[in-house]
Image 1 (cartoon, rainbow, N blue to C red):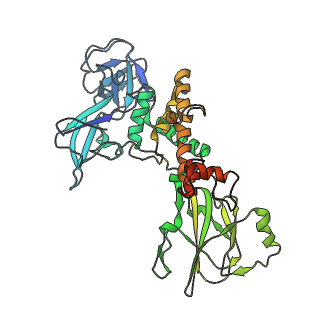
Image 2 (image 1 turned 90 degrees about the vertical axis):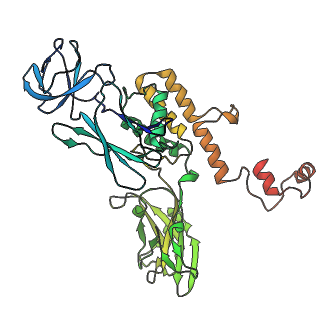
Image 3 (image 1 turned 90 degrees about the horizontal axis):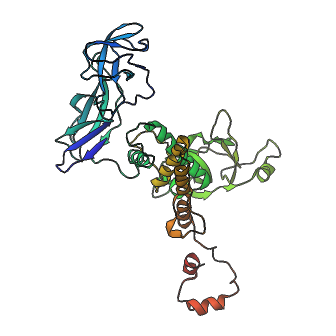
Length: 441
């Protein structure tokens, strides 16, 4: 919404309402003057609606409120149009004719900066805030000057503008890629939906991404001597309870492990429960007299049902005593759902999500060559292509592999054949073996 200029004031660029899906009619004859407008049908309009003559962004597009109707072929305006309009001109119905713009300085409350008419002859309404700088915040809402009603508030945007990983910047970049800078073909909401699709598609192709890793133990607050001041996002182990719902962690996508913190009479233990497959775990359930103990050792995952969409984990042995243990799952979460232009994507390479959206939008438009271009950018080049040109999925996979684990297998108990050759090449003991494996093998 905001742009800079060299005088440090702020140029606010507010997208005009998207009218393509609104109800509309057409002029049945040329309009030259007066409040009466001849149309092919007036039934879709009502008193106090706003009539926009022409498409948004056309040179003489303008609006006037509806005073009354003379059905079925005439609309009576509150005031005449300022320009002549030819037969066949589109007339759109909209509830808004003005914009109320509000600002908030770094120290102070919200204040109305101005209420201005929507500039229908442009794709966006422009407002100059001469006192604006990076410390201001801005928002707006559309206004019906006849009924004196407002729309909901827009997002709040700072005077500093969009960061690279914000949805607002990603939208601008996608619109450049699909050559739709003025929001003629696709609404912002359509593109944001594709951003979310791209995020989840990427997580399915490249699972266990490092930036989605969550360790709930990090949310707890242990004291110096062991007891917890707060369990954070942990879950207390209850007496005689075998099964625990995973709904407490709604963002959970893939479970890595479950840590158990045992706290009883001065004994403080933090350890990982052993994950067991169904066959192995069910060997401990041969009858209803389950073993009970203060020390929980293992767990299995139980599928979701109507009560818990995230599923369950079942433990063994069953907790015997009071609430003396706490479960702390470690998992990969789902990416944050994007809905607003100020939202921030989790992905460190926003361009790959933009390429996904551009691919789908070009495909919808029938631009097969452009769709193939952005599809290739999203998935990345073939293995034969130099690594320096990696994009999209391939680039993300490279980073994920380097961050999550070393390039070569871990050190083994026995030396492999060829150790003498290694020593001859690298020197005996000059370079650490782990360094060689991570960087050369």
